[in-house]
Image (cartoon, rainbow, N blue to C red; front, side, top):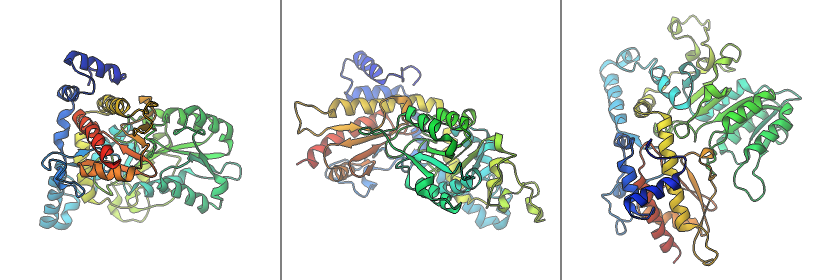
Length: 463
């Protein structure tokens, strides 16, 4: 998307429309942007469901042979085409050579995940030795907090956003209890200002400055799952560390979505799942990050065989040679059947880079925002007309690809009508639909088709 000014989507859309002699809302604009999208070939690396294959589709309303409108990569990414081939390779290897598969083949099971950690590191802006692929997200969060959360009577609080993803909230609460503290006293929850949907960066930094001497760990999302807000991770990290806090992030909704620089920002620790924007399949292998500055000072609280140096791991001496940094946090060998789809997806990421994906994302999500605002901004002259409030920040630097749309009408039937029309997205009560055009495989035409389907669904659901 280098030829377009992705920092100002409105101007770009209006300029393209003027050149084409049509309105910015016309389908020709989407077609033109797709034609000039230098990343459009990446879509071919994924399997896109057909409308007819989606269980809720109503084939009396839509053409079942069309690709569905898949805008839910924030919940589950599409399947990479190579996933099946890689899985088949390992099943065949298991069938033919049994235990020898641990050390033979293109991905020896005993260190298969190590071979793809450099590609993952590129996605999150880290050094390969700062990243480990292991476990699930919440398991990794617990392992990291066991080492980084060392409360004292004076400094025992964990700062996180109110309405953090439930798993993060539960993990933090249980870690506090585990250390003998009371979550009511030790969880510092930060809410938006009254009447606002998202947190202001200055408010986060002010709380850290004011309360920092009592905070042991600042633990935020990279992207807030409900609102889609992308936090200023660099500023939060700097502010927290200045007050003597460790700073960590749950990057589940940020990894593969936003351009991260975990190493350069000096983030102490982070973790993420890989089945959303990184497309590894439901329950896929998760990632963890520990900055290299801690590799000799922060040790894992729980030890396992896989934390032992690979060169002597199989000597079985029971004298631990702990790997430094995040590698020492490994507990067990990783499931090869989870490594395969993750490798398939990371190889697609490796065909481009996060900078290029982010440039496309700015225009793609800006296009969605433009169309939503054009058709569904609240009209005082027509108070009965359904309208949409975008709770995600309007500043592109404060969001990833997701827009969270809050509707003036009940959304359950609206959601069902969208699903009947081959649209995949997700609903969050009481009034929000989360829409995530993913630059890796979504097109501008997908966005335009969604807006058309939304119009039909709103008309039907309001009758």
